[in-house]
Amino acid sequence: MVKRPYYGGSIFEDRTKKLWTWAGKYRDYRGEYVNKKISAKTQRELRRKVDEFFIDNENSNIISQSITVARWIDKWLDIYVKPTVKYKTYVTYRDRLKYVKNNFGNRRVKTLNTTELQVFFNELRISGGAKNQGLAADSVNHIRRYLKMALDSAIKNGYLVNNPVEATKPQK
Image (cartoon, rainbow, N blue to C red; front, side, top):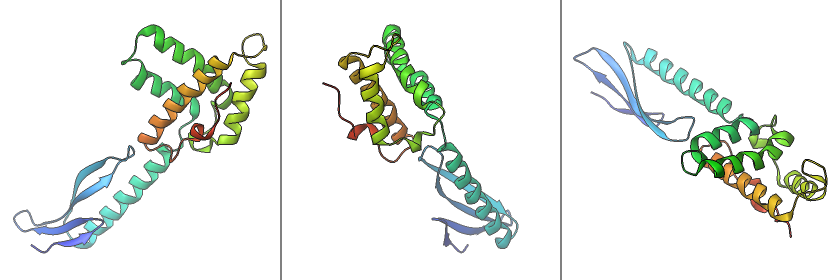
């Protein structure tokens, strides 16, 4: 039984089953470590299987990071907000974040930047709302706060590296 490092795991021969096995950990699309074992009849075939597995895993991580703003907000509201707050609070979050979904809904989460978010918050203050008369500073700051919470959760889930809302200024 010879152990060799390979992709942070070990390759060893199981002589009773007459198989070569790779055992190690990898990061899934959420960024969490998961234990994995892969077996094959020959060492060469095993290395090919492990290489294919890591290439497929990397591709799925890239795909998962291309989530849209609207999809992430809906997911965040359903998974993280709805079970933890009263229904009326959930409705408030959902209604306030509609402004963000209307403006940035089709964009990828990772493409948001601080400057365009600051311009968006300023425009909401001046000409936002149902009658285009502008929203109150408190309303805009609530939208900003809820978006910050959603993007903080996106960071924890591996969709973003940093939160662009943190560098924006609240309305006065």
